[in-house]
Amino acid sequence: MHVDLLITHASQLLTIPAHEHGPQRGDRLGDLSIIEDGALVVSGGTIVDRGPTVDLAAKYQADQTIDAGGRVVMPGFVDPHTHVVFAGDRANEFERRIAGATYMEIMNAGGGIMSTVRATRTASVDELVAQTRARLDRMLQHGTTTAEAKTGYGLETQAELKMLAAIERLDAEHPIDLVPTFLGAHAIPTEYQGREDAYTDLVVNEMLPAIASRILHPASFFVDVFCEDGAFTLTQSRRILVRAKELGFGLKIHVDEFEPLGGTRLGVELGAISVDHVVTTPPDEIELLGRSDTIAVSLPGTPFGLAQRDYTPARAILAAGGALALATDINPGTTWNESMQMISALACRYLKLTQAQALAAATINAAYAIGRGGSIGSLEIGKQADVLIMDTPDYRQIGYRYGTNLVRTVIKRGRIVNQAS
Image 1 (cartoon, rainbow, N blue to C red):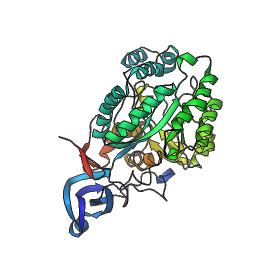
Image 2: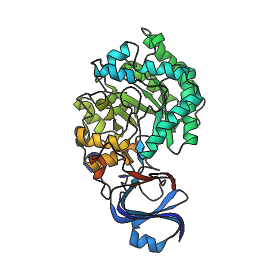
Image 3: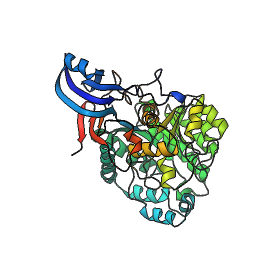
Image 4: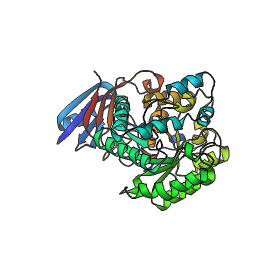
């Protein structure tokens, strides 16, 4: 049988399957379903077969054959929470944090998110695209093949629409598939300080309808809120998410990064696809989350970047039967990290995940956290051929090693899009 691509002689072909057409949950997280000396068959950008090399090499003739040479072959990483589109940087604030200033102190002094807002508001779409493309290039080199991308550094209608335009253009131009999320409720802008409800009105009555008017398929587009002290209250968050749901959007919510305000419960109640950060989440809400279809997205790069002690209580979430995913949270203020490999390494150390659990959380579960679990995140027949060849024979090196790049080859829809020199 003739096909487009045949990858042979994977020491370990990590298929990382979905479970019952959903994410891997609870103590079942970490199912890699390894095929030793495995092969993968691709045609039309889609996986059409997989199995032992000895069987598939005899069965198929391919336009292109890649000998993995005894290396790990796995799905591309999926990054389900990023703030990758922004202008400028905040290296000066990092210096202040080293000197002892807290994240909230910097934000309350006009820095933090508002510093990036000022830079992003003045940047053109071309400038946003150019700066973001460089970050996406590095993400691709480190194995990310699909990523969520948020607005949220405009905090006024036209600036938020400008960010969305940059995301749409980058999605069309860059090998990484981008899944857009509107985060107009990222912070209260300076001009609305003391009038937080008025800004919430703006998001609900002007921004959301403006976004809805240009989105053809709202169910595949997400709306997010930063529910946190100093950002949006639980009541304000509910207003925004309820209106977004009425408009047909999928929901996400930043919760419990610093203080538990009830955001996890709200996300579960409204059917959010994910609740993200989940650091200070109370035990009763962890139990509620574990019984729901909402996925907990952990961002271990953020507490690491802030030199904080507390991380997502991953073991408790899994013990409750929950679904856990990993993401970079790449942003200019707290964690400018473009590598899901580094996130896996942090998850092994601070969330106490095994390497297998971290890989499943960064692929199949991450795909479900952005509504793409049916098409990406695993090497299953019928799915998009987003594939990594890693420069190691043993998957346990991923998560064990850090500060390096183990990706040798990135394949997107059956085509090589990045090759290590």
